[in-house]
View 1 (tube, rainbow, N blue to C red):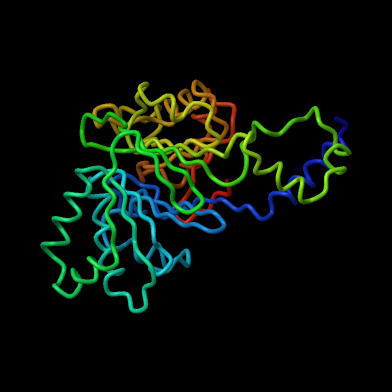
View 2: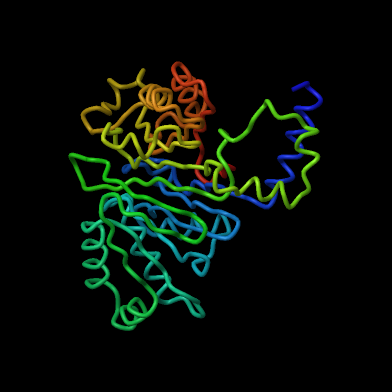
Amino acid sequence: MSVNEKTNYNEMMDKIMDKITNQITMLGTGNATVSQIYNTCFVLQTSSTLMLVDAGGGNGILSQLKKVNVQISDIHHLFVTHAHTDHVLGVIWVIRMVAQCKGYEGLLHVYGNDKVMRVIKTIIDMILAKKQLAKVAERVVFHQLEDGDCFEVGDMKLECFDIQSTKEKQFGFRAELPGTSEDNVSEDKTASDYASEDKAASDKAASDNHAKPLVLACLGDEPYNEQNRCYIEGADWMMCEAFCLYADRDTFKPYEKCHSTALDAGKLAEELGVKNLILYHTEEKTLATRKENYTREAAENFKGRIFVPDDLEVIEL
């Protein structure tokens, strides 16, 4: 394919995919004890579906949502990875706000493992008022997940997996999103080949059942377990915790806390053949240089694209 043909092809594919918008909004990127940034949680969004993943450790989730213009009335799906305080306490606030939100339409679907369900239900039963609990019963549906469960959230197809934590039962997930994987881009096909197809045919090609879907794998906030390779290998996007730089391991002691480093994440991404790597759940003492240094360290082994987002940053998938 010539340079001009490749340019024309890329422009045409951009037009085909214009209507398919997938993005992640990082509401928080920090670990459990941060105070300058918010605990790790994010919004996964397509053109028609929004899912909140975790909610941080308190009512700061309300501020973060407001900053990115997500209303409580917009939230109908909430995936909770595990019951640690920095992930689950914000969930209580979201449920409370759904309960007292005037004009909330539809249902809030909360997904999580058995421990997550017990913790959330116990806390809301203890602290919410009777009127709020009555609204929870009307508006909130709790979906207890088992390892390997598949379910649909709007136009997203999800499969959850037990990350095999030794600290706390925790589920990651694999999500198939609208659009097609980068694997489907063929440089052997010329721009004229694509140009000869009308828009309807091109749209059909973009969603063809034989095409690989766009895959996002979220590993939770602890190190990868080889048992879960089938969920992650070859993914278009991998979200992976990086507690600190490997160069700073003696300062932050990630391995003693069952966490990884940016170097480890880069090695893993390369080994699993993913295309894009997102690092999160970090320390906050190096914020001024975090993006640059974490990217550099992960890139020592990984040749794909690396994202080290700040709080409130949007990543287009």
